[in-house]
Image (cartoon, rainbow, N blue to C red):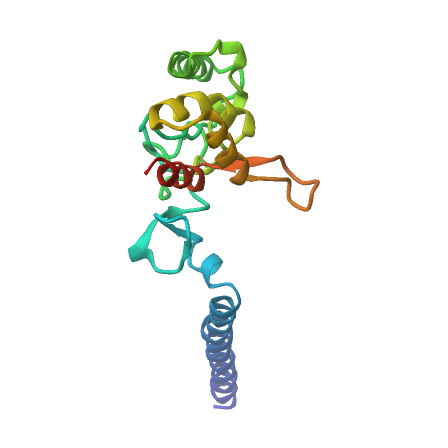
Length: 203
């Protein structure tokens, strides 16, 4: 009888600890963190969504995309993103890279095909095409391209939109971000915000 009572007492204590942990770590803590993020940085907390005007928004009903995610777009009037191995391309439910080694025949073949496409589209030699233009990122969702790849596309975008190359280069510069903290990573251009700027300039 005493052993049964001890088992009951320990089980009840364990149950109380479990319920307390669930309430504290599974309810109170997530609510606290969510509340703080919604007050201090709502745009970041809601997916860094952008409207067609290029403005930040926390409402998905007015969003055209996220500053954090690339998009598939084959409009020749806009800047192209880099290739993506996520699903059919930039599928956020299938984030991954190609996982192919640098000497894999499939990767070599895919790179050469993309090089031919870009060379014909931009009217440049293959040697002028930067590496990020023909390779996908590790996540397959990277929304950024290198300033070199953006520069490669300036002439086409300017011509198809009836803009001067100087105007398009200015838009590229306005949407170019430097290294994090001045030393980490590399400079990059956000394609979504740049394309929104191009569309507004062409209107």
